[in-house]
Length: 508
Ligand SMILES: [Zn+2]
Image (tube, rainbow, N blue to C red; front, side, top):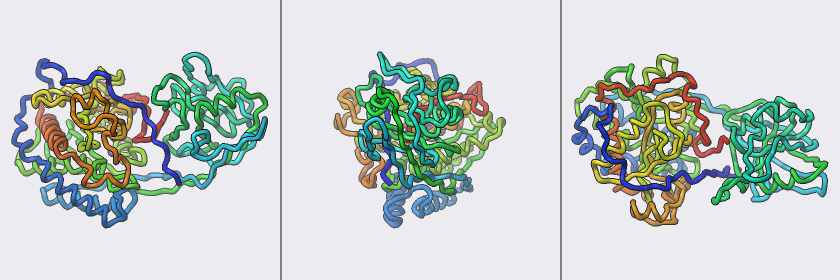
């Protein structure tokens, strides 16, 4: 099966420069001296862990993906190192239902018959977790807007289907709400299939015009759901008496994988959750994504234990499984927390890709100052700990959006403050970024992102050392603080976030 298209908007703020000027000391920062831990956490040792993960991939078909022997072997390496350091790692098992496309077809029967090719620019894609079905029916457009700014809430409200004839196929425009909400509303109105076309609103990168791939987020009982380009949708909407044949044959396979959790001592009611995903994509060994985050938190855990310090607040190191298929392990972790356990999580620090070859030092925009989408209360404070640290090192940073592309998603969705670091993936480095961070403009931050070439040679050790020091600093700062860092509105779903992505897959 072809790889699903991963389309994202460029999430880089226009303003890049030195971190914010000094403000009064962060509440959470009690002035803990993190220099000894930072000195102990070295890129040299992190590269040894990465060499071990590379060897694991080499011995297992070139991948460390979830549900493969390469993941199991990666986990055993992490567990061995944690045990040797004095931790008692625990496996937390979780279920997953993998979606696979067996076949899919889309045809216009009238007027003027036309066959749409699978995954061609003017063709279609089935959405992940589409239902299986084979239907021939009239096509009905649902509250679409092809004029002006093409602002669209098509299919987001049940009322959009007031005039919809049950049995028809719904033609729905992307925009505002998730694909899942649109598909569920269509199914509830009696639609036998759904075609979601791209929105066609202002977008210089063409990501709101071209064919796109998306996910319904989880299995659903139902009807076939496919996506097309804006042009295809607009053409269909302009015709009268349209009859379509839509068929998707897909399978769901029940699988299990696991997270690895390892705790320090300290106050469990103020747990500092330091996480990184351990799995790679099936296409490669995943050494930058996310061997780097994995190895950096592993080395931090080892050196923290060796320092003999007992944290004031418990640190839980989490090595997430199933991030690449859709944040499966971290979502499971947060989904099974009770309300009081959610409250006992003070903060989540997430590290996903911290050694990108053509890097930018990105810090998650916890306070929403750059992108408008802020994390739960307290996330701005987490961001400030990173910004103050990099400022103290005279290292410029840039903000990156909380958009759902990594494992903080379940935490912010439950009101738990979060933050973390990222050095860039498939987006091209801008000229402005190159002026600040060096490197090569108009080349991806990581040209081997999600590819077989994401090997041990795909790591910039200079930025890895800088990021690892910031990881050690933030981990120890939150481990030792006696100040309040808790968010103020924690609870199941209290974050009420509406994120665009689930890992690299589009939700809306
Ligand atoms: Zn990743």
